[in-house]
Image (cartoon, rainbow, N blue to C red; front, side, top):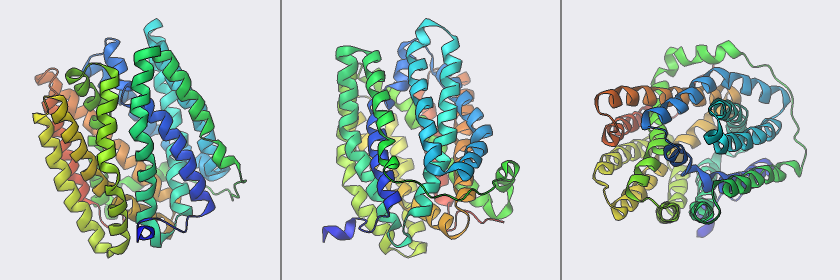
Length: 390
């Protein structure tokens, strides 16, 4: 019975991607919850933190098609290898920010380059080598194993910061980032270079047949708020790093097993039912954002974070299964670049709206939670065929 919930026919490429993703998730999850908190304790205001990430995503939007072009010419795995030193550089520059303002700009540049090389190649690799009949379970299982790692990672990160400081954490994370490349070097990548148009990547955002899905993917703007603002809010409720890591780890543990069922439901559902699952998830996820307004104690933060993770998984698994399926049926790189660029526009939009809100309601977490709740409803617009390629 358990095998019905597991993707049993993984290709070699997807198996390697699973292993690589597991290691890099351990690395980034050790520090991710603490990144915006680190900036906050260094004296950055909410507005300044938002401007930091605005610069990151604005530059990423301009350079993303170049990352796709590189991956199409030299291979997906080579692009992901190249992303590793930039991610290490980002954490190094982040650590050095207190010593000089120039490291802020170097950190931004390093993070942009990491995203540019990594994400188009990662999505394309998954879409190209995954199996359509197990797509939901592949996505769900990948999220499952990374969630299992993400249970212990914040605990480890919090423990390291509490006892040995930020420098030790960043060094440990850097070693793991380098190790994440090892699974992909076990077998050589067979790749045939193909051209990719920089300007057509932007033109596809405005095709009439893509409009509904473009707006649907704008919902990922809420992800910017959950990754950047929510950790700072948790820090105002729970101020020691080990407790923050424990809280996030507990919430992740509760939600992990749900992924098996969501993946199985996605594969066993008709294509139209996948959209129904996504719509239901978006409604409940938006409701979970409203509940964050009431999270004023550590227990309340734990409960609402758990509910949010469960409902977000109900969205992500069918959405990514649909996106990867359509990418495999049409053009892999064009599809995933459209998805990633739309996502980035959503995050930029979320930052700009949040900055306007903070002008009228300084330091208001509630205002940003409301913005995220409204953006989460946009996920329901995504239909089965996310992208139609001309």
